[in-house]
Length: 629
Image (cartoon, rainbow, N blue to C red; front, side, top):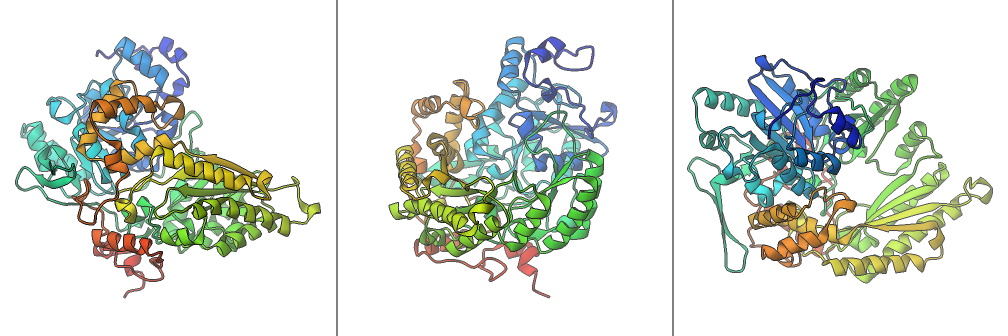
């Protein structure tokens, strides 16, 4: 593909930009975007989010790494996103190579292409990015001139289904090893070492996994016999990288501000990493252990600087469980004072619904517009104990009472269907709990104070997917038919309730969940299916209007890969998982203990109440050492 530079310095002509939806996705030069002189740069890094611009621009991780890399004098990090389907078609027809936003240069001219992999349903978009860039899809087919393709993000904790498409995976938090990798790259370039030799040396840097140097052997039944490095000096297990001192870690004080509205159009303040709760279905709760907090004074400083430098009119707190941040009252008091003067909105996700949270929300939200979110996850107390949710029926109903007393009239409830040990009674409990919350409204709010006359309960169910590095990684997953039966039972249960007219029911697509299950727990054999699906035209699988399940089923059939093998069988305690060579900080023994506790309906206390010996204390900090001198 030949690159054409148009008179205004853009990779796309005015004619093309006028033909596509939202041309501002492709022109770059947003406020706070970093432009450098190419002559003074030794390493060019294209940072990619393999989804549409509005989604990718909302991702905090890319903003952090973009800021961190561009602080290095001889490195220029630029951004690239998946072209939407309209531009994708035009680029293929006109042989226009994919380009980075800042310089508008072709991605193939860069030293590195870094792809953040946040969810499994973007896997075909990764191939779209490589294909449009003119980079060979499989790593072993790339030339000396191709960029080094490196993957990061939560999906790299099982990179095997996409292993053949990547040169390197960075396992863990991105702030720690990139400088070391860049120094190695410059040294190898100076010494005229080959791509292969550079990758071998990169594979010796902690946290970096180079798939081409590892071999999987399978047993006759299709399970893994062994997984071993094929060259000496490479680690058999790769320990995740982690930032223990968040307060000193790099953070973007001048985030890039998009021209158009994006999904998260606000300043994001990351207050902590990790979660104390230990929900057994939650992958993030295990991957990001131990809990580490940012100093409240540092957060105050960031809040002021980021609002000033971006002009955003909203600020949001980011964490897995904001209520567990120890200095939350102090931080919120500061933000309320700071933001009310500047007429800036505050968004507070991940709060538990208690009197403190509701008091805060009443100060920062317009009650008439807002809804409150509860995530009971299961319809019965028995099943909430199985998943270690740590939320009782009394907690939920008390929170609802406080909310209705505070003037809220709309409540969103989130549940999962297909959880291990689930019974029909548990499923019917979803409707019963929804009904009880509606009843609380009518019991709590006198008729004359009911502004809209009634309450609206929006009950949503997603389908359970057993993710790697959770206690449920051994569990079987339901088939599409089983999931749909469960959704039908849920709907029937809701329709039988006294307050059914106050309850709206939504459910997730079952076929998407089935595919996500295979991609989450698959091994290298799944890679050929992903490639075949892409060749059949599958991209933007996370977007329901572009998801073609029939094409995916054809791809599995043609590649003779069984969905049931990966999804519907329960694993034995002895089975080697495709991701067992990665050490995420929590031990397999701990996860197995939690799996057995789940089957016995036994609750584990959270990290603040009692240490469960998960293994994360080895990192030498965070909550594991909070009360130790």
